[in-house]
Image (cartoon, rainbow, N blue to C red; front, side):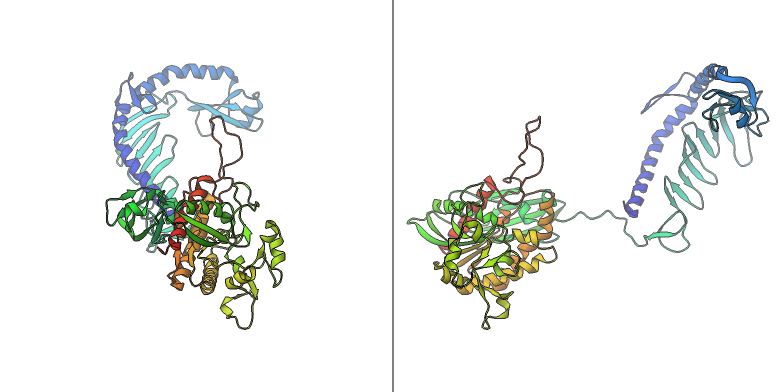
Length: 608
């Protein structure tokens, strides 16, 4: 807790004490003035009035003293503790007259060891207490109205012009104002020099300002000018939003937006209201997720986000919606898919399925087959492409050299004869740099060259190039470097693809990620700058054939990831976190490619 927060807490204690004092006043009056039969109702149960406590105490005290006296080793009254302990067995009792008492009081002690004893009781002798109710006395500085004592002379209640004292509390004015507990501790003490509330002590300072000091008076912290206002509520818009204005949808199913993917701080999802409305028709939707398609919403729509904590604080983005109709006759499209493990694991297989549903005949280009099965990333029965497990953007450009090998000229056939696991770590795009190459495309002596790649492996020219890299940049780069890393690599790859295949459409995106503590943190520190870098590289290139597809906001981060392989509990539920929070499975894997397919289709028929 900060010092400012502590001060706010003490202020709350003052307020609470003031509220309780009013309620307590009536109880105090009944407690002080009730007769010998009165019980006062309290939150902890009935409390005998002072008069009733005095009556009960007087009735029980003689018997209690008699029992304790009978246990004492002798009737002798000792003058020192040493004498009493010496003459008394362990755990037995002895009487002693405290020094200076004049024998008007004696005390009963229990011997707890050869060197220690504990006080059990103090007994008044003679006429020390003449009555339970003492006469009212008058003093020059203080007028006493009431004083009640027990048979030992112990004070039960005292009321004067300056103090009200009971067994439970003490309220005093005069030189100081004190609210105390029944044990002598001061809950509140205030005089001309200081105010003490619990552990907080406040004194006037010799110079202007507010200072937190240690017990010796050393200044621990200077709070002068520090605000005592409550910390402002965070806005979901503080670091901008993560989206792109072009959305493509197919004819057979709706697309879905999830607000989690638009916010850099996903902890603020519940604070954010999202809505989508058609600019030309009746269609509208609102919620944490929105289902839509371009046929129902039309070609233009408005995406709106609102901060629930600030109802007038909105963010608006005008969206362009592209409706892809079913093609008849069938349209052929050649696709080069550059990605990582998320693309390798059934990416091409699902993409083919959803494109064929819309009347497209895809041909996948590349040198590395993906997998067509859900559980085997090493299987080679999927579509061709360049989706390589574990690779980041820098592996393709050779900005990172610790993971990949190269195919030297003349080794193409040997490379293609390798199995998938042997081919996976070799970069087929690289060629040795020459003096004719501009320095800005050379990375560690090599060039990412799509034209060279196509020529050496005899590949067709792609109509659409998909790039979904970024997940492993999140894994391998720091928060401080990931933006510059992705921006530089994206800039190089996009420029080289554009130069090699000027008629090809490029779709750039990155998959989203699941919701848990680790991924939420990475979303804010790493995914957000990756998306920003992607968008900045596209903006810098200003290329009409390049589209940013916001797939990161089009799959559900709450579902579709692997669960722990443990037995359910007694309630039938498996407990724990995702066993793999990175790779989508099931519905999320299908949804990713169901969202991507309309972009590929729209690019193939020049809608984007």
